Image 1 (tube, rainbow, N blue to C red):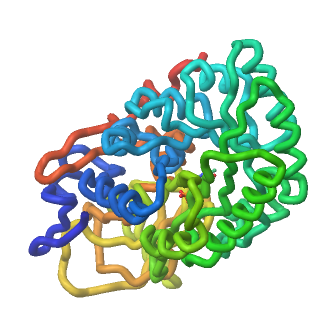
Image 2: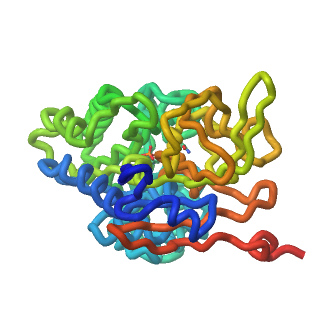
Length: 410
Ligand code: LLP
């Protein structure tokens, strides 16, 4: 989606600095073509297996981003009533929506039951009972997958590992059969599948392969008890290249799964977030000041941890490139934001092209868990979001105003 034409950086056919000059910064810029390319890579990678790709809205819940996937036939993975609201507005068919999350409320269950979603991914026996009661009160049956904690190491950051004994997610592998027996006895529960999600930013095939093995074992044990499943939901987690990672492609995963799934009629569900949106977005920011301390050089920019929290939270790497090349000089700097926290940084001791006051920089791979995790911390209005498509662009979320900051306050 990003390339230089001469000295200027372009997002598809749109000059990044022209856009930033017009709309102000910080500014999220998404490429429609890249969103579609990512979705197609996932969908066609698994073409030989029956499957449904459910976009994990938590990675980027902007309505226009979500709608791009909905129009292409994707489903949605939601984790709250708020995401259900967004998913429906974006045009996802309820029949393609799965509802994940460790703490669904009755109200959330009710609205999802009323819409007739594809599946609830249930994470505890208490939640199962609560869902059963809620469905009974509505004279409905709730379609359910149980989420198993498969005890598979994803080999990723500890904050985004989810499938080990230490994590709050899912039902322990050792309890999963008895949980299915409980589910079978509940009259307003309909068992449809089995789900797991082992973590995020996974950059090798092996953890996914181990996951498939564990899940198929459970599928077979359930079949032995007369419980037959329609689908197997492998969660999300496929990584992207932030720095030097070389993650597998969806087609690589499909090739690894195919021999194991041969002769089975199970439909596969996936819940990718990062893979679909991560590389399709940048955060554009302006250099406010330079500060040399004798010890270091700081480049202070107008975006901050409230706009993109990943470096502060996970020490994550995001490549930073200039919107206009000034020459070949490079320097080693800390790129930091204006928020009053030492953790407010985008790069530390990083060699980047020399930049000065007023220059625009693009922080790359910011499409996933960027705007979605942004806040108004330090009373900073949230950034604007824009979608480019060829030479066209469209503001898909207005920059917040000062009034937005105090809405509802007294
Ligand atoms: N399904 C479930 C049940 C999940 O918990 C998640 C992510 C996904 C799907 C999508 O995973 P993905 O394909 O995007 O890896 N804020 C962190 C990532 C948190 C991921 C939480 N769960 C970050 O910025 O790296």
